[in-house]
Amino acid sequence: MAESMPQAAREIASGYDLAGAALDLGALLWDGRCLPEAPIRIPLSMLNRHGLVAGATGTGKTKTLQLIAEQLSAQGVPVFLADVKGDVSGISAPGRPGERVEERAGQVGQEWEARGFPVEFYGLGGIGPGIPVRATVTDFGPVLLAKVLQLNPTQEQSLGLIFHYADSKGLELVDLKDLRAVVAFLTSDEGRAELKGIGGLSTATAGVILRSVTAFEQQGAGSFFGEPEFDTAELLRIAPDGRGLVSVLELAAVGDKPQLFSTFLMWLLADLFHDLPEAGDLERPKLVFFLDEAHLLFTGASKAFLESITQTVRLIRSKGVGVFFVTQTPKDVPADVLAQLGNRVQHALRAFTPEDAKALRATVRTFPNSAYDLEEVLTGLGTGEAVITVLSESGAPTPVAATRLRAPQSLMGPVEAAALDAAVRSSPLYERYARAVDRESAFEKLSAAKAEPPPRAPDEQGSPEGQTSREGPEGQGSRESAGDRDGSLVRQVVGSGVFRSLARSVGTQIGREITRSLFGTARRRR
Image (cartoon, rainbow, N blue to C red):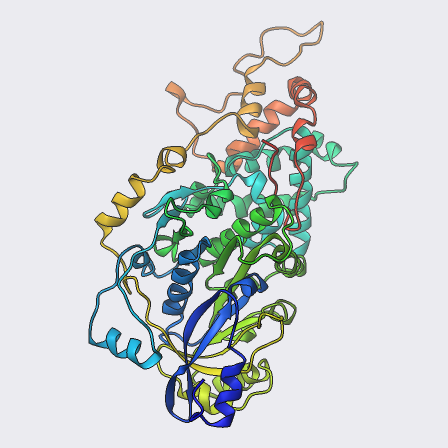
């Protein structure tokens, strides 16, 4: 460490003088100068202590994610990135040398070399580019689904009862039509009787849930639910050359459904939590998960949902997974969650309005004591600069350091569509997940029961066959809504007695195999 540095700068730099494996973030900024002899680093062993990357739009958050992801991959750590704007795919291709890159590398003491990294591209439900990522409704669970459907706490509790019933009766909710069929059944006289032992479900509440599910499906969200369900263990893979695989979830095509994709990201994390064994503190994490647009998770969230996020973040660290929330200001993240984020990268904030100024002061209060005037520094940072504090190798917070960040080695922008499509189709996972499968589940079981003739009383005359059909000539359906059709189907079925026989035959097999996590997510034993 250079003796010519001011004493305050030397004290800050000493907090980042690490002995073990670490990621190089950039160089210290002090008194208007960049000091390449004072590198700012984060210990690899502390990446499972979670973090926050925040800053106003256009300040360089995406490039920071790219920089961190590259170095994690190079050190053999898998990474998950959500590509909301469609510009992270460039991490798979070598960057382009140029004057600006060379200038930045020289300023921070970086030996820059163009490199691409091993990437797997995914897409929600097959919409847009990427290997389709799907979840069954059963495994997505009631808490997360209630968040997507924007249900209130009472409706969320009722949805939980519906899932409990379906689990216990062996009625697998693979897709949304399965859920609609079960809700319609539970609003019938026989269905209400079935629920007496576990709590009531009002017709009005069930109707709200049914309409919400139907509207959600009509908006095109149905394709996200189904099979084959994505196995989140795929995110933990290592490339043949020993580098960690970077999993990029392409979300640009579903950018108009922010509640859906943000909640789907939480499902991925919750599913990992459910499946991974305890690992304790490791020399390097098993996975680092970047949760972009994090504020969407917390907006309008129920108390149960917030408690589940808090507990998942607190406990998943011991399973070797680090989580970074990416948003505009720390105040977007609830205090209980923010308190668990030991690593902070805060890009510039703007103070154009009184509300901006209030957010700036709130952000400053979330940092430990600083040698800087943080209000001044945070409004004066340039693109690719940030205020950083992380956990040292001993677990203590490092001094707050204004930092000029390194330049990513991969392409800072999207790859061409043809290259992305070729990468997806050449993946060994493509054949496993590309084609949707619609197997027998709740809806089909109810339909099969409908096909059986109902039991007849000894004095019953004539055949009931065809008497309750709602179809017109040549099999054409009526113009009733999807929810009405499902309700009609269920009303025909539940009175026959065949449904009761069917329910007894499937019994509680799924109920014996399903366990639900903090979020109500489920993973059937394989």
